Amino acid sequence: TEHITVEEEQYALARLAKVRAQNARKAELRAVLAQTV
Image 1 (tube, rainbow, N blue to C red):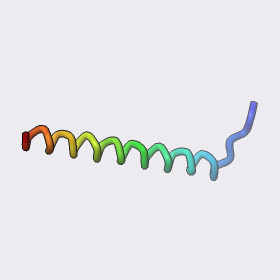
Image 2 (image 1 turned 90 degrees about the vertical axis):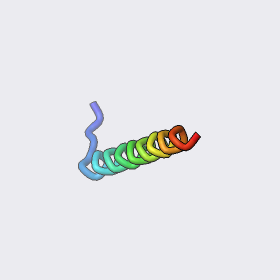
Image 3 (image 1 turned 90 degrees about the horizontal axis):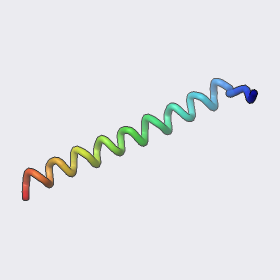
Image 4 (image 1 turned 45 degrees about the horizontal axis):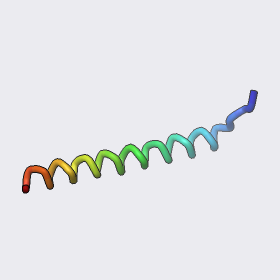
């Protein structure tokens, strides 16, 4: 099995967190736009 280094794991977690933050922001924006319409 491949060994994942701490650096690789932290990088992956950081990317995942960034994607989740972007998705949350998009959902929030959609909710605001839905209220406006």
